[in-house]
Image 1 (cartoon, rainbow, N blue to C red):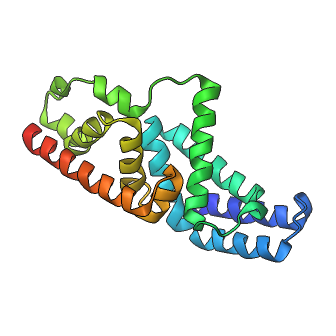
Image 2 (cartoon, rainbow, N blue to C red; image 1 turned 45 degrees about the vertical axis):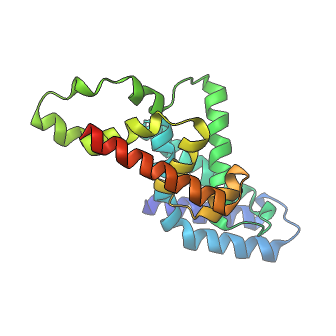
Length: 195
């Protein structure tokens, strides 16, 4: 993580030093400084978002790295119409879509987990390794429609506010809040039945 942070800081400084021409250089520097400050908080959330979507650590790390690279590269386009974290999650979401298209990747982790029978857990050791509660939660999340799954993942793994989620999905903050609350109750009931 420290090496990655040095990379981000170095890359942002390289851009600022002449790699990319920015018209609002004071504004761009201010946003880069904020990005450097918020990096430690945002990185784990972005990584968790990618890991939940792809189920692959290396892919999640690569996409996370690419997200911050793109954020630094296009820092001048940040217009303060949203929070920095919402803007970064928009970049992450776009990179994920690009990744799916480029690799013709058809199944996300959610779909894969939905296909895994719950009876595959055979011993106590496997229970500890798999963390059954998390697996069951992801299994139930995978059964949701795409829009609902997106809201739940952005809230749980991205830890975004309802206002930020609303911006990302093109709905109101209240819609995101009410929908998440209903989905949470639905998933809790399913978990009670399963357990």
